[in-house]
Length: 146
Image 1 (spheres, rainbow, N blue to C red):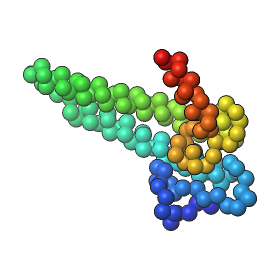
Image 2 (image 1 turned 180 degrees about the vertical axis):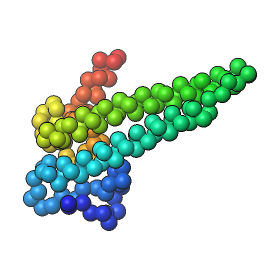
Image 3 (image 1 turned 30 degrees about the vertical axis):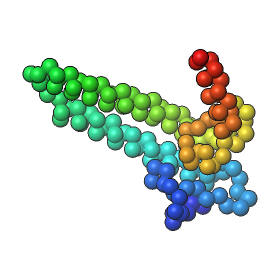
């Protein structure tokens, strides 16, 4: 696989950045395998985090007689649960992305159909739009939000 394990670049979920070979086909098998590895590692990290939260909440659950202490703990748990909910949604998005890879539909912009690009996908493996279309979508969102 044309990944360079000694690459000094930033690791994406424990995986070295992809190094394209000259003339390599965009989203060919080696590239798809690379992104499957990144997404699988990311999903595993999230699943471990979810398990740790459940364990933490079980261990830390206490019936404090002081209402302020009880409120602080409830607020802490509520924050953790909100974070886990975001992670649950991200896991769903990772699963959707893994399916796109399996279907060989990964790596192209949903809006315009151009290549999203390896560097963008390294930075955001679940990206489904190229930089230009994403920027336009964000501008439109801001205008509608006013």
